[in-house]
Image (cartoon, rainbow, N blue to C red):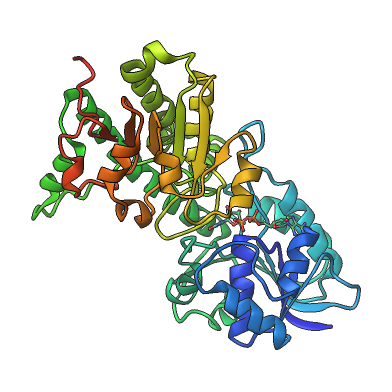
Length: 442
Ligand SMILES: NC(=O)c1ccc[n+]([C@@H]2O[C@H](COP(=O)([O-])OP(=O)(O)OC[C@H]3O[C@@H](n4cnc5c(N)ncnc54)[C@H](O)[C@@H]3O)[C@@H](O)[C@H]2O)c1
């Protein structure tokens, strides 16, 4: 069959792009090695929650603009190939390239002369040239190669695919033009950079920059906790009508991109003899935070109860609450859970999330109770931890939550969801990141 585009990997990035291109009238073939995903997509459904995605998939499967397959058929013909496979960190802490390697060999088997190949996965600097292009050169076929990173925000990807400028990096003018022709179907704004490497670095800089901003906010929270002042008051008062400070709000920093991209950036530059000190320090601060906070909480409140069968409830398991997502990958809630498991081995731990399905939660936390609602989670609880910033939480009645806890129970909120709730102020049962209420040295 003839298609305009073959997208290799129908995960969060591949499927949203496939849906958006198909909606714009482009005929898309999605190649996905996970058979369950292929079946789901071909039945008109998305395999994750993303605002606006499900109806597009349903329509585009019905009208035939989008088809998913496990492998290319020999007769499938695509003008463009886009690689959107995963690049998680391996057990050695380095970004995995095995999926990129397999994807490029599948593309090479399928491509005809003068195909355009687009690398969209987040990769170590130099991967497009040294890994992908080197393989393409060996084919002796004519090719156009570009690196076009995905920069959308999970939960807002469908909108952002149309609104954000698309970075296109290539050494070849013709390759850039060819890639731009495709992306113009979904966005009006194209930004060209002259090399694959510039495009690769732009993506890594975007995420390292965010990680650094959040790390600084967490550093401020850490400072305020130690001194015994409220970090939110410090941050919000300090930037009020003051044009030169814009500190982010403190909180747990994770997710499938931030947990790895700053590491990929750091690893990339090591090969060039450079140690990215700020990028590395930011990751260190954000990764240390859950264990530091949990051990402080345990030291202050549960030191004499380590062996007790305490009830601990974790609320907000998706890696973020804004925009809404059901993605559990790289969620710091998982790290918080592990810390509690280790520090309080006899605790009964339960979890709740307003977006993630009960089935997913059960698969991810097989040894935990899955609460049906907040009431269930708060009832007689010794430690209630809120681990993301889903607006759902700030709309709850904090007074009711506190009154449901066990007599000595406390709430610890990693995201200050109740910062504007009068019940939270001076309430010794409600603690939050950057507002620990008791100075470290007391
Ligand atoms: N999730 C995001 O919001 C986001 C944003 C920007 C960039 N990225 C980057 O984009 C890439 C993809 O991310 P993702 O979140 O979509 O990952 P993902 O793991 O959700 O999706 C990748 C998919 O590719 C499939 N796959 C792997 N090898 C394959 C092959 N050879 N043939 C066919 N299918 C194959 C996997 O089964 C999986 O479904 C990563 O490099 C990531 O860092 C992700």
